Image (cartoon, rainbow, N blue to C red; front, side):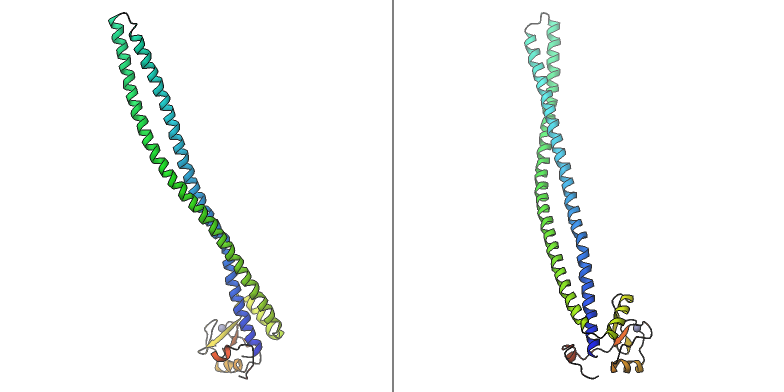
Length: 249
Ligand SMILES: [Zn+2]
């Protein structure tokens, strides 16, 4: 490879990395939205539980009022019992009192059941509130983390963009312009390595004569089939010092 080609390969590498980073940055808002949606669902559940508990305590207050009504009826009848004149009236009054006592027993039972239910639900609500609080914290920490991640990714993109600009400034226009054009057409993949006599882009066989031309590296040579520009990768030891020297190939 000549220097221009080597720089182009690096530019392409950078562009691929930038694309991946930008995709990650773009996916962050969706991640934040997912966290917020989870939190909202948990909040709704807790709201429903809270409403149920308050409904129960309202029911209980109503039952307690009924109970007080019955109690006062009973004591009223009991005082009237002392004033009745006939046995028939007395029996009738006793009957009333018995009926009220039956009602009272039923109310006592109901209130007891409501209290048990209410205690159970209040305990469930308390653990729900704790869970919700935990979820709130997690959501806020998650958002902070995603924010920091996005910031970091943007910094990386910024650094890579400056590196790319710097490298591109050193590339001959005869290489740079066609590269940019093909990169646009080929989703960023304008340069492909020839490996085992095949194009790294479309995998169609590259003629030995064409490979010879590519090796001579006197200009951009396109794959006959996919029109991407071909290069023969440097030996690993040379690739390490990419751009530093230009050994004749
Ligand atoms: Zn090809």
